[in-house]
Amino acid sequence: MGWTRTRRAAASVAAAGVIAIVAAAPSPAVAGTRTEAAPSSGTTSSRTTTPRPPQLPRDFRGKGKWVVRDLNITVPFTWQGRDGDSQMVAGGPQYPIWFTNLIYHDTLYTLTYKWPGLNDHPCSQIPGVNLDQLNQVFKTARFVGPEILEQHPRRYVNHWRAGVVQPTRPPGKFLRFPLALGDIYVDQHNRGTFWQVLQFGIQNLYDPELDEWLVMNTFDHRPGKVTLPRRCRTAA
Image (cartoon, rainbow, N blue to C red; front, side, top):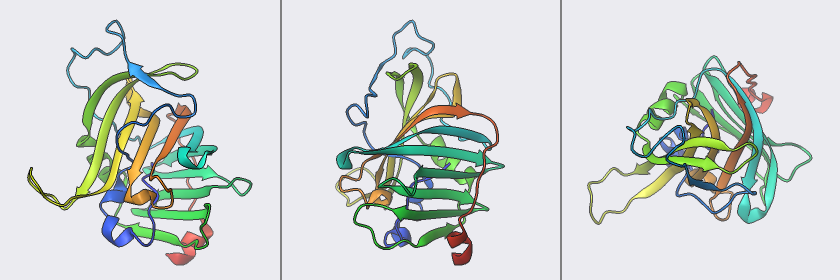
């Protein structure tokens, strides 16, 4: 799955945080999407036990949109996984935003082809990152509750919050930095079906408000296609 878009300037301090494909507290409606508490008669009730946390599958494919609300930019988005590798692609050459994130052969790659105000386009990489580590982060996520995403069709989801904060400190007055925080919305019937993610943190340094959404229209548990860009192969 992805992971968050890391920045080369931040990579040295965010190596742990970039594993999470995650974000902070929920924003208001995103491109017509809002959340509300699921009714007590729904498939999941607040009185039930806490469901199992999100788990990204080894094989999947999905399409949707990438939303940067403060820039008023929405672009097409694909997310695919095959044999534990995975790739996100947002936008394309005809759009104002175009980037790809990959977990490929135990390395995290991020390559931003286009972003407003960006002139530097290296392929950044952090070795030692894989699907198992990503799912370990999800295991520590906190259950917020069952919700309904008002989309077409409606999505009955479980809302989770996860994050990586450094340095680790006990409760009290200590300086902490949110490297990667996130809200994750997975299907109530299948914790491996991801419908929406808000991500926030040091991995979003290109966005003025550090606030980016992915919203899936489809999510299918069949192997997708993962391709390491030529620029990343050269860098490796």
